[in-house]
Image 1 (tube, one colour):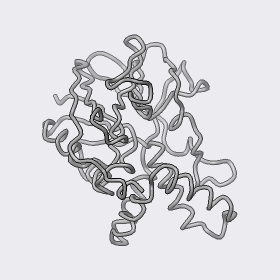
Image 2 (cartoon, rainbow, N blue to C red):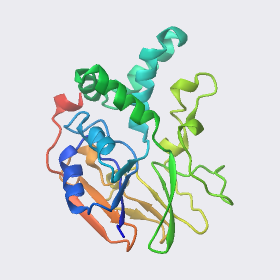
Image 3 (spheres, rainbow, N blue to C red):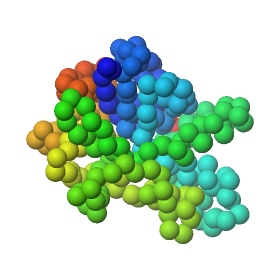
Image 4 (cartoon, one colour):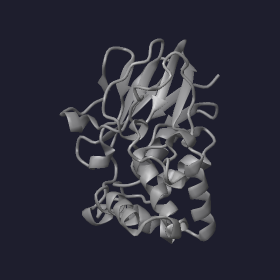
Length: 252
C-alpha cells in the first residue's frame, strides 16, 4: 500500500516538484496544498505537472485563486464593474507578482488554457485524509473559526463563491488567506501559505503535534528557501533546497 505525502507552495518551481515525484512510488499519493503559480521561474509548468500526474492532488491556494479571478474577469467582463476589474488586476499581477504567470498562461494554446482553467475550478479547498492511524485536515491557509468542528468535511470551490459575483470567488476567505492557528479536536491540521521566513524561521512551524505550517519560502527565492515534504504515514520530514531561482524580471 502506498504512502501519503503533503507539500505546499510550490510557486512555479517545477524542478523541485519533479524531484519530489522521483521519490514517490507508483501507488503513493501527494497532496500539494495550494499556490502552484507565481513568483518562481517556471510559469505554468508546475501546475501542468500537478494536473497530469495521477499521484497528485492539488488544493486551491490564494495565488491560484487570484489567477482564476483574472480569468473570470476576461470571461465576464461585461458583468463586472471596471473598478473591480482594475482592483483584481492590481492585486494579482502587480502586488502579488502574477504578471509572469499571466504571460506564461497566454503563451499556452487555447486548448491548454481551457484545460488549466477547468483544472483550477475543480480544485478542492479542504481535504480530510487518513494515514498512519491519524486523521488530517489539509487546507492552504487556515481552518476558519466557523468551520463545522463537530463534523469535519471536505470542501470544494463552492464554499468560496462570492455572494454578488459567484464566478469571482471570495478571495478574502480565511481558507486561502488566514494567518492564524485553528485546531480541530481529533485531527492534525496542516497548512501552508505563511512562509517560515515570514515569522523569522527557516523550517516548518508547529503548535504541538496537531498543527503544522509546512511552507518554507520557495516564494522568496532566497538561500533559505526550500520545500518541505511530509510523509503522513510516519510524519517523516524531508527538505528539498531551492534549485533554480526566479529573476526579478520573471517575478515583475
